[in-house]
Length: 284
Image 1 (cartoon, one colour):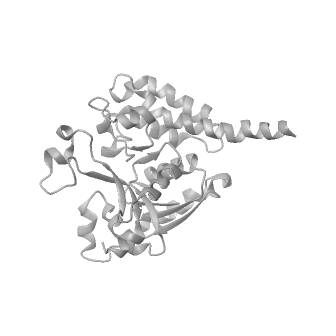
Image 2 (tube, rainbow, N blue to C red; image 1 turned 135 degrees about the vertical axis):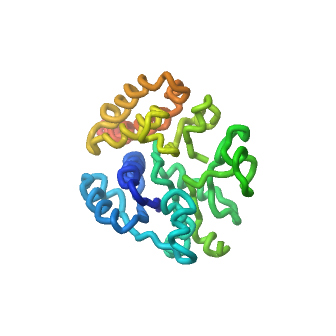
């Protein structure tokens, strides 16, 4: 499974926490494609090597410079948030990669990536990429209220999480993205209410300020989780404790939305490591 991200400026730690969440919850091997400014490359290499071997064996990483093959590089850098336009060039740069999942640096995985990767098999013969709607409710969506340019559907789409079939994109030359908008005005994402959040997108810098403490709590707990520790004691339990301090916010009133997929993942880990193992022993 191929995961791509673009990091510039002060996004080193945020990117590492995103990669950490991917490794923590996934069971299949991952290949990271990290596009970073030259000054960040040695830091990425250093930090990733510091992870314990039990986790580094679950992935390989490739670090690339920020490059734009056409036009003015400075203009491309300013088109979206720092260097995000690099995602438009992934099919050209990663010529040997068939498909990948692109995410922004401010994303956290709360369930195994393989669950999202399987959606590639659901593409029909013409579909190239999959993205979530920018919003579920047009009257409070950004595009439907402010956009001066054409956008897809009634609310536009959010490219912070993008499943891409690069082979098809190259041949033509060219829904799991939970953001503060989904709860800051009241819960409005039925899929998350039923199934739990799969991918958390902390846009508008909410991991680093106090505007949405529920999102910040998740970021900090994953950041501070010691790799070799018990998921329940050192991740789930601290998260529950932090959530108690967020009940004064609309997002904080629905903690089960944020916890449901983590609970499912922990249950699977427990069953694989304990119940199945003891069952096999018992038979002998």
